[in-house]
Amino acid sequence: QVQLVESGGGLVQPGGSLRLSCAASGSIFGISAMGWYRQTPGKERELVAATSDGSTNYADSVKGRFTISRVGAKNTVYLQMNSLKPEDTAVYYCNFYYYSDYWRSDDYWGQGIQVTVSS
Image (cartoon, rainbow, N blue to C red):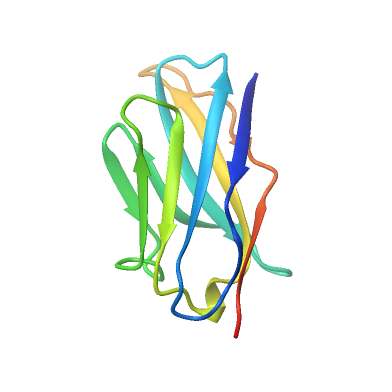
């Protein structure tokens, strides 16, 4: 089993910044992939940013404003969110899975963090 602990989030004015963090622990094997998704009421959960084995991937809506990073080999990921817009308001979820050439674990999800961008 893998446990995810998220932190950060909150209320910020448009144009402001926030940083989310997520730490994974437990039985982890192979290469790990970590990322952030977000969801608003009535909409599907969408990818915000993800990183795995040195590569990163961003949603078009956050490119140039958000940065995902990891600390060395630790299973901790950060999402630095700058120039926040009201449309970034959502519950943000940390996602984690691990894999090798021959298998992939289940997806693990954090409990979700509310991010509200409002004046």
